[in-house]
Amino acid sequence: MKFFVDTADVAAISELNDLGMVDGVTTNPSIIAKSGRDILEVTKEICDLVEGPVSAEVVATEADAMIAEGRKLAKIADNIAVKVPLTWDGLKACKVLSGEGNMVNVTLCFSANQALLAAKAGATFISPFIGRLDDINLDGLELIEDIRTIYDNYGFDTQILAASIRSANHMSECAKIGADVCTAPPNVIKAMANHVLTDKGLAAFLEDAKKANIKIV
Image (cartoon, rainbow, N blue to C red; front, side):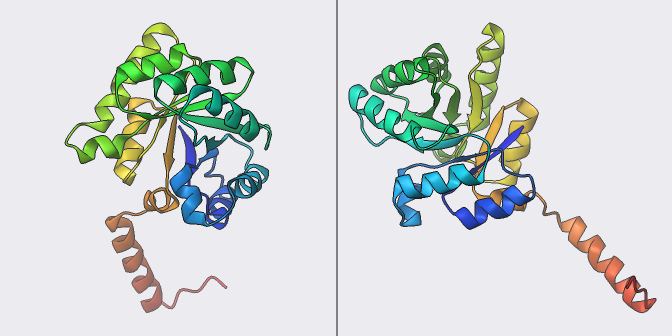
């Protein structure tokens, strides 16, 4: 499973990228606003840093305007994935932009039917939002399972990009289901390394090493 980092924090991306933990990056207007930087400037910097797809989202809501914005974003770098919302106008924009050879990430997916439409429109990625479904007492992981089944049934090339990841458990469950990609904040990716028994075992090893006066250098 590929790891995308859901942030515009260049320092955080760089740290994970140096460890081989970054296969791509996702951003959205909220993330860009939090960074306090110009969208074109920070997106270009991220694209120069990582080799994989970098999702940059349009802010228009009407198809023709989305297409115009998407074309401008795509000029930033060859690894831009234009991000459009899963609305009827977004699907129209997806069809045009993907037909022009651009990667397109269709976001804000909350149903299997929406994912099916996105695949038919030529989406490179579909972004189902797990955490936001969990927030309203629906099973976000079940949606990932449903989309995986549908895409496998018909051989769609659209990659499942699990989004709105809230925990390390979401990451492992998506991997077991067979999501192609998970995009998560840096803190969630780092939390995957944590386990109480690892901490307990390390503490015991260090205490024994101290008692035995074990030194390597």
